[in-house]
Length: 233
Image 1 (cartoon, helix red, strand yellow):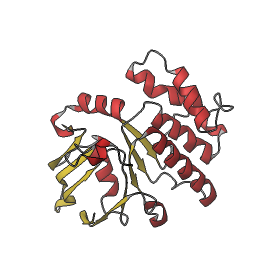
Image 2 (spheres, one colour):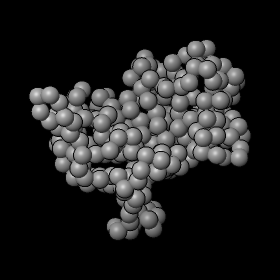
Image 3 (cartoon, one colour):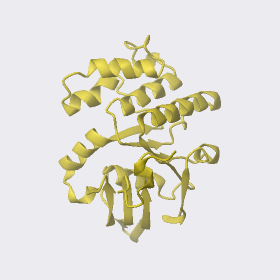
Image 4 (tube, one colour):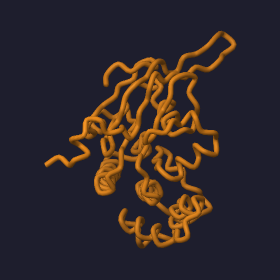
């Protein structure tokens, strides 16, 4: 049975993108990377962004995360306009509300699995970082690998550490950029099963950038980019 929030058609979107554009100057003229992108994502929804290489998928993800600023339009996260914040303000929003999973894992090689997962909690100033980090690593099946460094872990294990790091802060929004791109098919499927299970358990809003149509079909919505424009929403 739908809950009250899902019945409220006026409920504020978790993420709202309005007339978003990104242009960069080149010696030959201005290059448009994204043009007039608009959509809204409800809390707890799962959305895939698909498109050919160079269609603007990763740029769009960076703008949604506040890692980059748009040339026009805006991104609202839980009703707050990211472009109205300075760099420190956007960093605080990311620390409090956004989790990331990258294709290349982005683990710090000099830190153990446990230390990598503790890091975002420490940066946020949480009093206890180790307890939640240990518990989250146990959820991804790495309770026995806490003291291992990334070089001592397989690709699948490294991405599990990355998943733990993304979820440990309790984000309201999870952004995943080609999360299985560096994994073989079997390992990638296992990681995706884990990602969706953890996402459902946490009630997180998921935005997934992928070129994999099979993976995209697992999400409740698919947004398709072509040449910097949204052609299917």
